Image 1 (cartoon, one colour):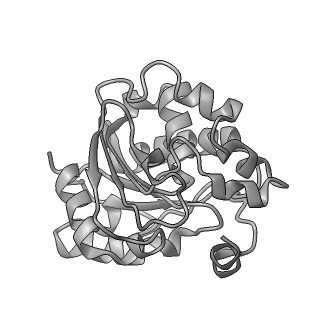
Image 2: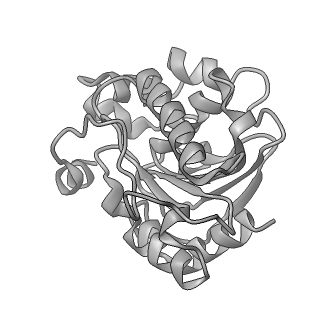
Length: 224
């Protein structure tokens, strides 16, 4: 865990989000816009491989967006920022819904948005890659931060966001999880009741971000 934190620690990202692609005049979308949500101490740059893979499959820059949030604040606030960001993407593209692809703690940010803020009405697909959807014991090493307190299994945040229907609305849900994760403990924490839960034989937590096999599977899921 220390190595993971040391390798990922970065400056606090407090902005509401970073839009990728041209700043003006988005063209009509041919795919549902995708919003990527990074994990704890991550950044939009985590999605470089995913964005390149999606573009190679025909997505335009106007259809790919990377949301950024404060890894050390409060995931309730982060989810509210995600809600605003999704509305910006919808307005920019003219799309009625977006697809969300998240990683690690981005799972909790996304889950709160869909489960507590009515975000399911705005999301066609949610793909959770090694999401901390039911928490991780690794968060016990950073409980100085509110987000880590919320990420501990059994926290009031986890209990609320997993109460009732874990996959609300008409959104299609899928997860990817692996026993080799090393950060999401237990690794089965990623699975969501009601989702298509995909077992990956062996992939590390950060390795997913450049795993073109998994990222291709995610893209194919968004096309369903």
